[in-house]
Picture 1 (tube, rainbow, N blue to C red):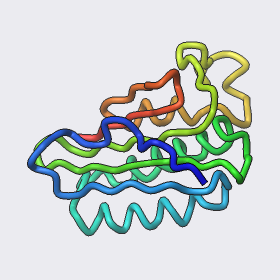
Picture 2: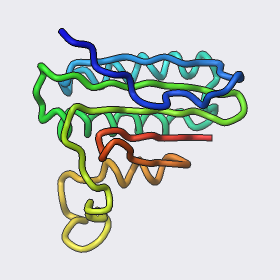
Picture 3: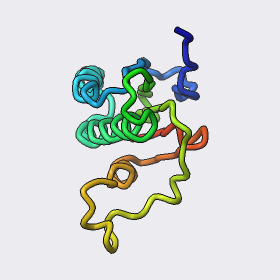
Picture 4: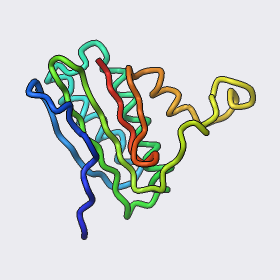
Length: 149
C-alpha cells in the first residue's frame, strides 16, 4: 500500500515543542471517539491548551468526522491523517487531512441563519471556527489547520 504524504506544516517550526505526533486512521466514523479520547489523554497529560481542552476535543471530533463523512465519503478503505503539535509559547496546532477533492469553505452556509437553523447537520465548521483561535483551510479544502492559544 503506498504511503500518503503527511499533513503539511504540522509543527510551529519551533524549538519549544512539548508535544508533536501524527497518525493515520481508517475513514470509519467509529474511529473518531477512541482517537479523540486518546489524543485528549495525551494533551491533558502534557498540559497543552490548559483550560481549553473541551474546545480542542470538540474541534478535533468535528474535523475528523467531516474528513470521514465529506472527504472520504464514508469509504473505510480510505485514510484520514491528523497531527498535533503543542508549543510552550504559541499554543496548539491540529491539522486534519482528508483524501477528498476539497471544497471552498466560503460556500458553506451559516448554520445559525434562515432555514439552516433547523438543519440536522452542517454545524461542524461553524463550531470549529467559534472554538478555535485560528482556522484555515489549505490544499484546496482537503486540510484544516486549527490553532488554540
